[in-house]
Every structure is written in C-alpha cells, then in structure tokens.
Length: 445
Image 1 (cartoon, rainbow, N blue to C red):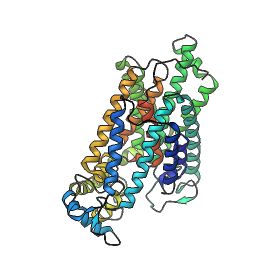
Image 2: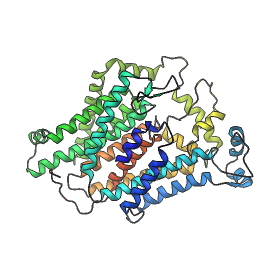
Image 3: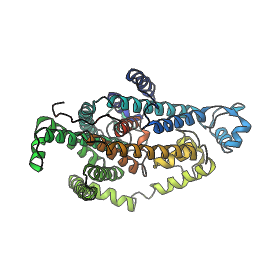
Image 4: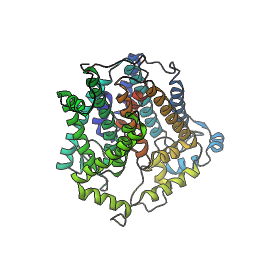
C-alpha cells in the first residue's frame, strides 16, 4: 500500500523516473513475502494469464528478421521508418517504439509483482490495516487535491505546469479523470473496510438492526473512516468527471447487491443509494454537473474533438496492426504518424482502455486481458461464496471497485497511470485471496 502511495505522490505518472525504483521495490517485496506463483489451484490460471501477457509484451521488443516481421506485422516497418530518427537494422522488433514498450513492461511487471505479493500477504491477514492506511492516504490525497485545485488550477501540485492548455490537472494527476479512477478504487475498498468494521462490532455484541449499525458507526475509528470517505467523495464530485460518476454508481450498485444475501433487494438498495449519491453530487456543484452533462451532448467548443473522432482514427491503426499491435505504450507514437483528423490536438490516448489495448497489443493481448478478467471474476465469486466472516465485505469492496473501473475504462484510460494500476492490483489480490478457514474478526483487531 505504501508503494502505491509512493507512485501516487510521483506526479501521477507524469515522469518516468519513479518506474524503476517502483519496480525494484515491488521485486524486493515479492522476494521478502515468499509469494508463490501458480501454487494455488484456485488462482493458477490467473497467474498463467498474467505471465503470458508479460511474455507477449516482451515479445514485442524482441528483434526479429525483417522477413519474419513483415510476415507477422506488415505495417510495422513502414511506421518504424516514418517515426524513427535513425534507421533500424536488419532485425526489427514488433514495437514501433521499443523504449516506450520497455517502460510499459516495467510498469506491468511491477503491477504483477504487487498483485502476487499482496495476495500472499493478505492470505495471512492485514486487510484491516490496509483499509485504515488507504483511508488516510485517500484523505491526504483529497485535501491536497482540493487545495491545489483552488489555489493553482493550472499546475500539478503547485510545482509543474502542464504544457497542454486543454489539460485539466487535479492534485497529483495531469488528468482529472485519472484522479477519479484512483478515488473510485480507494472509496470502494475503504467502504468495504468500514462495512467489515461495523459487522465485526455487531457480531461481537450479538446485536442486529439499524440501531446496532448506528452504535457501531459512532466509535472513533468509524467516525474517522467516515470523514476520510466524505473527503474523497467531495473531491470526486469536484473533479466533475463524468466517467468517474458512472464508475462510482457502478461500484455502489455492485457493492450493495453483493453485500446482501437477497441479491434482488440488494440491487434495489444499490440503485437507490446511487440515486442519492448523484443527487448529493449535484447539490455540491449543480452548475458544474449540468454543464458537464450538456457538454457531452453538445461540446461548447466547436473545435473540440469528440471521443467518436478519436475512436475512428484509432480503428484505422487497429486495421493496420490487427494481430500484434503497435507495441505496448506506443499509442501516441502511432497516432503521431497515422492521425487522420486535423492536428491541432495530438491524440495520446484512445479514451477507451480496451480499444487502446487492441491498438497496442493487437487481438492477442486484448484476448489475454479479457480472459484474465473473466478468470478473476470467476475466482472472486467462488471465494465470496465461501466467505462467512466480516472479511467478506473487504472482498466485496474490492470487487465493486474493480467492476467500477472496468465500466469507466469504456470511456477512459485511467489505469495508464502507474498509481492507479498498482492500486487496482492490490484490489485484485483482495478479490481472489484465499484466507483459509473462515474466522470471525474481532472489532479490536
């Protein structure tokens, strides 16, 4: 969790220098934890998918004979020649920009190591401490982000100026939508921790009902967690991120429906809670919310580029690199050459995580990722069916956060920020961790 906080503080992925120390730290934690990859039959298939995806990204950087490269990816040599400042040799990689793919591989490897390390660590406990720590990290992030936005809105953490005048930096992130991604992940897990805390109190005192819930929420720890959640929710509303709102609604619906044994009633409660949440966001900033919704229907700036335009140009690249893609991390490089629309703005992201995966990794990487998501969901559902203690709410919070980001990824690429990817890896570990025999968790823990 501290490693994820370090990546959060490193300007939201604006600079590449934190990637190497982050990878070294992740590798050290992995070795110290004694994590075993592929040892658990329940998660072995997920581990194999992760290794296969990493191996594929490594393959994209491997030099191949020119005849082999033209057979596998005919469009790559021409794009490499158009982009490179110096000629490639006789052997060429599949990636049009090997340095960018190397950096992406480092980030992906760090996320995989964090996933395996966290899964091993949480199998021995520690979910409460992680929930409390994330709550305070989220509280600090919210306060810093709101202060920065109020006093120096065109900078990142008061110190870095964003060269793109259209960018909307917020807190430690260059893009407010990436901050929304981080907040949704954090809110989901902290809410699950709070629910676990409340349920443990009620179980210890053998009490049920709304009065018991209020009593459990009135202690110091619960009030502090509620304050942290409130600060993060206010910051999420202040971002005016439409995709962030949609993701939070998805998290609320999924979390409440999974939290009740009666799934039908849980779904209704979740929809009601989502409506209240949206009403609260509108109350906090009604004018801003209405303006953002109206801009989706009719952009106020005639020169603004819609997502449909970006997706149309992206599909042009996909058709040229269908199987192996242009290389992980090379979307902006490919667009620099192949962008069809007027170049007042260079498209550096596809604003769709799945479409960008298809562009950079081709059908092979997209299929690997989708298979991994299906296996992750199946394993989490199986683990949840065996949960009897209050810890199940942490797993539910993790699952709700992951589903929320999967929904947000239809319109955004928030996981491209290393801080978001590492936090998502921690939530994935909590979603599938095997805690052995179910046991009740004392509220004093």
